[in-house]
Length: 128
Image (cartoon, rainbow, N blue to C red; front, side):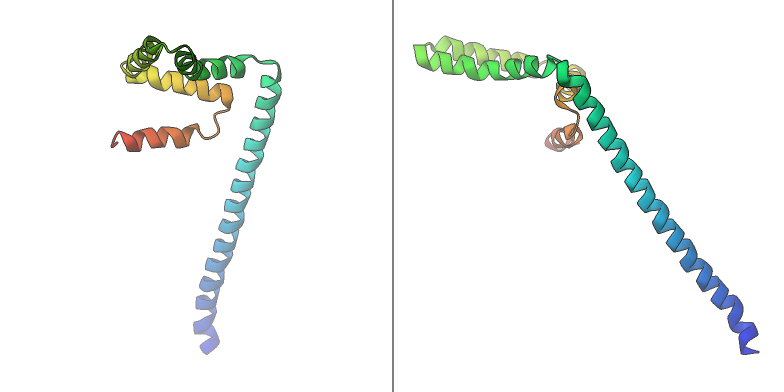
């Protein structure tokens, strides 16, 4: 009699734990697939950018204000610093969608890894 009562309950409990075990394995496999996919993508991007000039171009563009400020200090020309400041002000006044597109283009050039984190920082800064 006890066996007749406990057998369905034991089957239910066993089925639950089997289901949880299968679910854990599936989640683990999904995570491994994401890791494999990311590794393949990064490898392909590294191969594709081996002969690319985009990284160097954007590095020079991003470093240009620093060089200009250094030049201004070296030759004691404050107007250069004012012009750099005007340039940054003009960039900050561009439409937001254009700023995002520019950000994404530069991020893609250097490898999009981490761009989502920077975008999140910008959202948090803007209070969104």
